[in-house]
Amino acid sequence: MNIQELLRLLEKDARLNARDLAEILGEDEQEVAEQIDEMEKNKIICGYHTVINYNKVLKDELVMAFIEVDIKPQRDKGYDYTASLIANYPEVDSMYLITGDSDFICLVQGKTMFEVARFVSDKIACIQDVNSTKTLFVLKQYKQSGLLTGDGKEKVIEERLVVSA
Amino acid sequence: MIKKPSQAVIDIKPSGIRKFFDLASSMKGVISLGVGEPDFDTPWHVTEAGVDSLANGQTHYTANRGLLRLRQEISKFHDEHYGTKYDPDKEIIVTVGGSEAVDLCCRTLLEPGDEVIVLDPNYVAYEPAILLQHAKPVFIELKEETEFKLLPEDLEKAITDKTKAIILNYPSNPTGGVMTREDYEKLVPIIKKSGIYVISDEIYAELTFDGEFASLAQFDEVKDQVIVINGFSKAFAMTGWRLGYTLSSREISSLMLKIHQFVIMSAPTPAQHAAIEALKNGYPDVLEMKKSYEQRRNLLVSRLNKMGLKTNMPHGTFYVFANIKPSRLSSDDFCTQLLEQEKVAIVPGTAFGVHGEGFVRISYATSLDNIKKACEKIEHFLETLDNQRKEELEAEVLEVMEEIISI
Image (tube, rainbow over all chains, first blue to last red):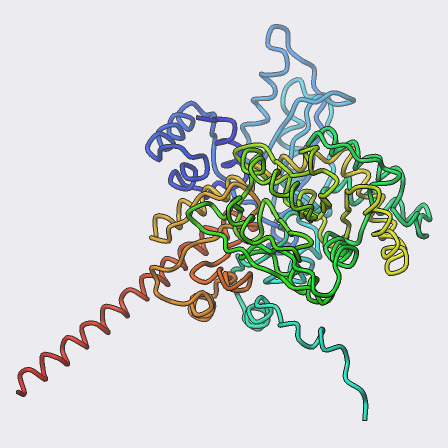
């Protein structure tokens, strides 16, 4: 079975079920179902999400910010120990170790700018070995998970011919 | 009194697709499996090359044949991908889509009374292009049993002294059928002997699955009789850019150029710049889109067969030509009722010729999600049809019983 392709399909559309995937890949449905179970158990597949365009809904109820965090890595533990202290907060949506001026970049979500600011100053900045933080608030989202979320796309699609030769 | 316009134009029948376009456009919430173009956007780097050319002031005519750099890229592409060689200076013309190329071939080759062999079912633009030259289309029926291929015995039978050309379109819109090298091999001696021209519309060449694309132009014995039509619309998702091209012998090419230079001047300049980028760096995009089409095809064909619409696995294009004869509806009724009852738009086979009766063209140039939803609706449509039939039958039986009782 082409596992790479199976994952690629699921990554694009998590609503494809075992039957769909089996038909698309020309595989046995039962085997596909077992393969997916296995990958869920092994945390190769860690979860299923929906891509929401927050430009359109909940406009005032969600604030996002990228937080750059500069730390002092610990002997023997490197970056990973401090990273886990930060990543465990539910406010942190995603987090990466990066090159450049800071060490980590985290995407943080909150209800208000104040809430996000409080989280940074009260939680992240207080973690041992954190030297400094820099908060960059998101003004507008243009693309997420490979999908454009800017305005105007729907209109273009509407103008396409419904039936053509 | 104002005089009458051309009778040949008046006599052209309206496209069978028009009716469904009008109907579907007037309805809300239609899922369309009726489109003849990719649903993908043109790859961004290709669009960007077009935009850049505009910003750089490349907004003038190009050479009549098209930009030399583009013709060189086309020549290189065909050499590398299909092993056919064409001289960029003398044998290639860049056209306004494959559509102009079809018309250009007919104008260049045909005289009143000439016969042109057309396959049935086939793409909608060939017959009008022939009729406008006062030539006569002669149809060869293609059959589902032989995967809608052109068979040598049928070709031999159709050729007369008056035959000037044959128009081929493989991979085929609407059937999804393909011709392999072995299939063409059997036609070569017939074409060589008869001296007819082959207008080979290869616009879906890159969308050949489960095997390699083949063309009559790959056979040196008949290469000079073949005019290849290709373009950027399908493979590179560039329908709106309107860019195609012809590959032919230099004699035919110079004749076609006479018409093209007066009627068109040159194909749109920004589109030509975009096309250079497409050929140079766009092949990975083609392969990515092709993989998606293939996966959608697998899903669609599997679902159709499971719901009882027997469908062969097509080996090219993004169309499935499904057999709907078990429904006992005509193609037109099937599509009209499906659209009205379930809001799913597909195209009746009869839009592509009389021998398309009993079939419908289902396009999978749409998302997996749309294909799944449409299949559920088609299945529901077939079930409703089945139940209606049963009720009708029961009512009939009841009527007969009552009659018997009353006697």
